[in-house]
Image (spheres, rainbow, N blue to C red):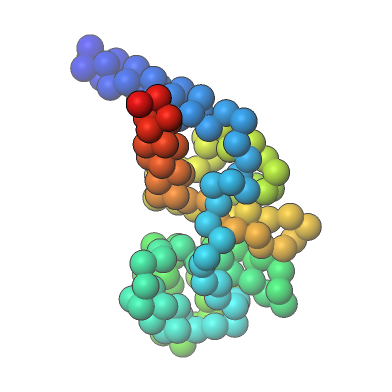
Length: 152
């Protein structure tokens, strides 16, 4: 039992450190802006090809230029298994996923960013970027490295 309490406390401490490390920064400063999107009418076969061709694992889905959801790697695999390669991306994508605004404060939205997930950065229905755990952690490492340099 005490081991569980230790790890829970350690996790809470890290969460508090993360939020304080990003206090005063907006989502806009941490979001990915170089990513591929899928159209809701694209096939799951085309989505699988894009997954294999690069390092992106979550794909924003648009319908008529408006954000419609996110196709995660897990969504893609489930969709392929249950619907086949010719099914549409729109049939497998996660809809109703939480979205954040580019002007939102990063420390406030971190709790919405689960492990291995992405948040769509949307304003007025238009996709502006993606917020990923990996990118937030990379931003933290860069900030810590530049702060160390400034102190030295």
